[in-house]
Length: 430
Image 1 (cartoon, rainbow, N blue to C red):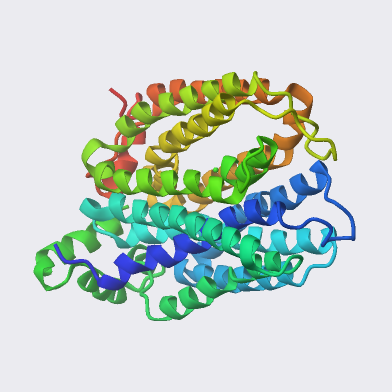
Image 2: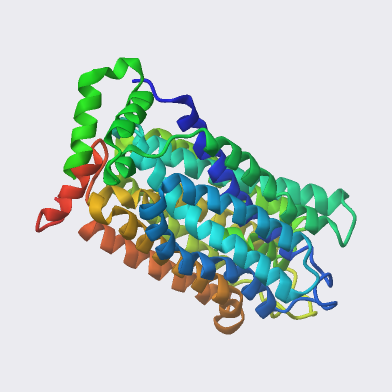
């Protein structure tokens, strides 16, 4: 089956935006020094700067779902592009902690809209047999964006001018936003939204473009008729590796980012073959194991408070390597399952509530991101790193139980067929 080539390339730009923003803050935090408010940043400063993005993403996601229904998926993505560019510019020009928080908040508004509407846009435009892979392509390029951010952060940190290199790190985030806006101008609106607003003829033409000539009129008719019927270690990894005494923490973080990218690439080929449910049940135990191993590794290290000028005790090589490996195991498990499947949540929702439900689900995701971003460094100080990672392991284990009990399989089903699973008293879980 043919798929419009622009649909194949569109997720790469959207994912790069999201991924670059996630990765660049890690490098930025260890490069700021006294550039903001003429003083070293405290743990609370770093937490607020980081979590402000997640907070605004949380607040904007439900609102974006309303706009996506009223204005269309495409226009919300274009608005997010404008906010990405504005937020990058505000961060690059920041002179105070407050100004940096404002820039990160504007980026959070963009993330809140884009992270919800981009997977929805892809899901509503893609044929059922390709939907999982195309949504996963978006996640692959999120991880690629993180790799690019770490490479840029390392290069500017090592060879850029001290005190201004970080401004280039955050400012470059505007570039993919501009590129995506240009690409989106020539992309179609989703046929499902067009049907919802009564533009059936236009929806048919979009389906014809997506399926290509080989799709045939019968497939186009069936598709249109069916329509008518119906995310913390990446923030703080450089800070963690600085605490552990790695000589180039940003470069060490790059190893984690590359692991994330490589395993997400593997997930691209498995997500439609293995299935969403099974891939979650296979991958989460690796996340739990990685977190428990990290807790074990940290038990051999005494760290100074994260905002202290005192140095941590030099960790033994074995303990530091154990923690690095544990984080790589965790990230690999995350990239295989939870890094991908939650962005396919629109599959489970009926068309009349798909946009709103996806917005609420995305807001829940960003709510958790906000809590983690705000409390991670503070928990490291209050509970010790070992108990912080034990707490996260327990949360992952609880999530495994909920997935085993409630999450149905949707691979290979049309959106309308997948949504009907929730009509079953067992929610389609066998």
